[in-house]
View 1 (cartoon, rainbow, N blue to C red):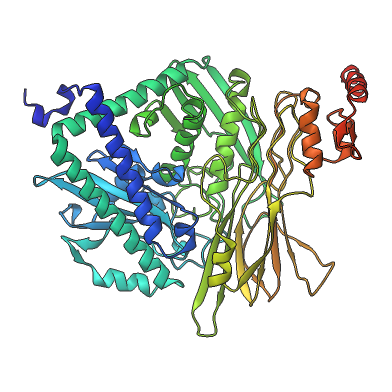
View 2: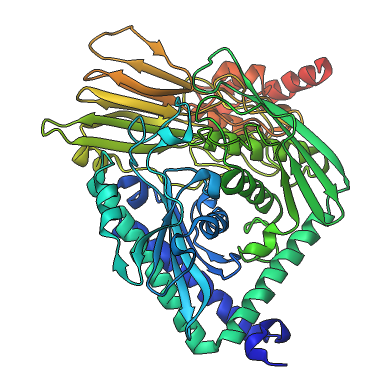
Amino acid sequence: MNLMTNPDALTVDPITLQVIRGSFETIAEEMGHVLYRMSFSSIIRESQDLGAGLFDANFNTLCESESTPMHIGSIPGYLRGIAETLEDEEWYDGDVVVHNHPYHGSSHTPDLDIVVPVFYQGRLVGFAGNTAHHVDIGAATPGLIIDVPDVYAEGMLFAGTKLYRKGEPNNAMWNYIRRNSRAAQQLVADIEAQVASARLGAKRFVELLDKYGETTVFAAANQLMDYAERMTRARISEIPDGDYTAEGWLDDDGRNRDRQLKVKVTVRVRGDEVEVDLTGSADQTPTAYNVPFEGSTKVAAYAGFRKLLLDAATSDVRVPSNEGSFRPIKVTAPLGSIFNPRAPASAEARFTQCNRMIDLIIRALAPVMPEKVIAGSSASISFAAYSGVRPSGDYWVFLEVNEGAYGGRPRSDGPDSIDNLMANTRNNPLEDLAMHIPMICDRYELRDDLPPGAGEYRGGIGVVKAQRVLTQAFITHESERHTDAPWGIFGGQDGTVGRCTITNPNRPGEVRDMPSKFSGLAVQPDDVMTYYSPNGGGYGNPLNRPPVKVLEDVLDGFCTVDRAREVYGVVVDLVTETVDMAATEKRRAAMQKTN
């Protein structure tokens, strides 16, 4: 048997295995760092809305950067889509491909995927790839899009398109890109950063093969994938067999305001395998509020179970992020539903549905995993696009992701003001905003108008951010959970729904309440969009919360004295900033009898 052509026949020793694992992970991190450090738009440079990694010739994920799960987890779907649509139907050394077609595996159209083939000794052995969210790809509205009739209104569609062929640039395609974006300079510069990142990944991959040999490297990759699969199956097998169901409601589709959209999740556990079945969820919408199945729906399910079963902070061993952890998970969504739309339905605004799906997976499994789950999170996203035209006639476009909050946890409060469940993008510095965009942030702090869900461990507190435009502008905003509050669990109370308003300091007292999502809203100078993200639900009986914790929340302004008494049964003396323990014990005893 020739080991050089059959890496499965080789068992790599543990030390070499861990060295190669570390090399994979370092390469992915370096690719991510190059991408965000070279990019020009703040959504990539500051928010790091990106993903990068290496893949074998069968499109298996070998490693991934520590970035947004939705990005890196989607690249195998992109690769399968590229295989269906590739120019020349063949890869050559020096090729660079761009791809973003939602009906050929992509996550959604603004996430451009750049892929470079990895050739070793004249043979195609794998790929280096990355994705990043771009400021504007020429859609019907700048930056983001919701209320459009079909996928063709989402902007430029690329399917297996070569930007470089055998190392030579496709100048016609580069010119096409420049002439079809409102933010062409940023778009082209960011794509060039992606190309540099992917080429670096390919170079490092070849260096790794040179150092340890092709057979050893791929044998190690296969062992690491098998290990991740075994660990995932072991964790799944700890869940009792059964069908577990949860459902919730999305506010609307961005056009039909009086029509909520159902999300139903059934988790079927059988031995060491699990199925996420979305049958019963809403039919696909006439707007862009649909989810590409291959590039987003499946990826969200994979991410959800990795969070539940393989969390690095709570697991006794660290399991590598690779294809193996996906293998025991099946995802089902009927064709024609919101999670598996029929072409050519638009499917750009797909993130909040994925977050809610994960939230409901957690809720469904709560009865059998009480020490692993959390209460309801904001499980949404506030993704806003601000844009306008400069006196020169050029567009300015700014994309912003706002934080949410987690639900209470088995041993601690839900984290405040943080991206959650399906993302880990960073906030954009306010100084950067003022330097480059005609906008000013008037307010940015923890939400204080309504409390988080009460519990032994309270829900996290969301963010409130007020952004003022200094010129005439347009705003598109994708968010959720204005009607369906994050759920409390095991006696914890529900959290607080989100809110969005438009005001203007020149018109005091005039408040325009906005729906959770809207497209291309024309605003005037000094108009302010204020977003209040949902607060998380509580975990456990509020009467079990340590009185000192309640006191701390009162002193921090997160809980009123009246709420402390009525909900937590804690009597706070603001003058002395202490808890009246005798009165508290009496109050709690009376509340326990009533309950």
